[in-house]
Length: 293
Ligand code: SF4
Image (cartoon, rainbow, N blue to C red):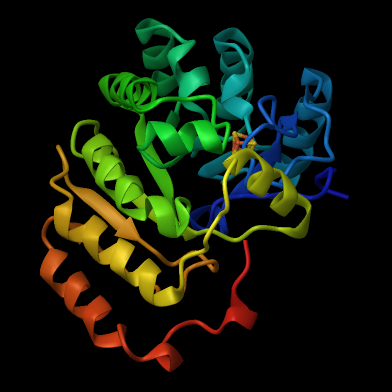
């Protein structure tokens, strides 16, 4: 076997054609109430010897690898020296390497100095995926994200200053019926103040193993948003975004009722028109049975 994955293995949709190299197992934080991805994995770093073995195996079959995603959920939690060691080994094995990427959290971005971030970028770690979920401090607390609007903004600015691109995700429906306006208004405020290169939406989808924890931590009755409500959130988000730099926007993840793609602010009117066209046509939305995480 070329690569010894410890399942389940998750990666962003945009990394589908790239090499996925598991350098950590699980998520060190592992406390977000809506997330069941790594609940059954104990976080640990794979040994550098095991990582090197896998690099060597891949290299025998394909030395032309150009893009690599470092799994699992929280590879950016590694300290800078550990990450640099891995990046140097990857560059030595794959001369055509152009980009290394991984998931990151606001806390583990901010734990690195500006110089460390710049050094990681100089060694090809040029894209990080950050689940910001919402800009609302109330909701960030309810989902036990371990971050605030300010701490997220600070981390996004740090990454941007180092030249590391951020692909951010937010979760539509996260505030339920009670807090949806606060969710969107404060998420817009965050995104209008802090730079991201890519922005994607997920639609709240609670796995059976996460549902009880999410409801419990929400600490009041959670009233789920309907698809029509979600489209209203999406329209408000797109209409109010005034990003500090151009954003490539996608809602193509399988959890979304409506798949959209465009650049903001250039395609704002086109995207809003697409939402408006399906607002009262539920049969034009992705069927519930086809949605997943
Ligand atoms: S959402 Fe990300 S940071 Fe939170 S528990 Fe899941 S993998 Fe970890």
